[in-house]
Image 1 (tube, rainbow, N blue to C red):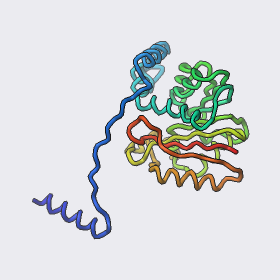
Image 2 (image 1 turned 60 degrees about the horizontal axis):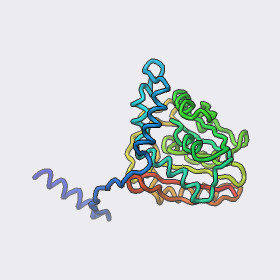
Image 3 (image 1 turned 90 degrees about the horizontal axis):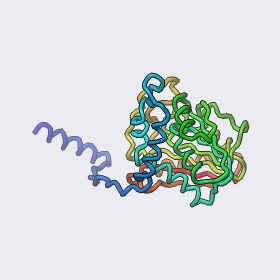
Length: 262
């Protein structure tokens, strides 16, 4: 009874403050389509060839560790991010492509397999991720660098990807302009982050107080759209952008922004 009384008291106080309680139905996982048996077997075979072991690979200590990371929902998001380019008329054929925070290199691997004549570059803060992505995407040039190490104007690319990175970084004001500084005129920046309505990943640890192993930013579709619009308004050159959610994951789990440098 004491618990019921406490519950009624909380609900009463919430109602007085203008808040209510709404019951939500559990989200159903839709059918996943990209990481079918043949594709998974091919990726797993390549991972097996790397020679992963705990002594030399503390994080990616075994093929299982890599394949657990490359689970279906994550792989779906990578494929959908590349498809997003096509839907917006961003052809990657023959283009220079940079993936910031490439981690496993899987997004670069998709681009390498789908488009001819691409020049692929990847960066990652963690040396072990650099080694893994270089092994999985031999045609890419992957280097160790944080997002803050990338200086606008040093090298520019036709298309820059930054997937599932900004949620780890405390500074959200300079990253989009900095990334756009790496994009050639007429090129595009594609950014994705988890939907904060469903993401509950804690911050975990940080080496520098700037970037975290876990998540420190949680955008909703509404706040993400406002964030991109506000940042775009501060730029001293024109851009056009589209924001939304990627489909075929859990409902709306991944938010995207595709920003074109006019």
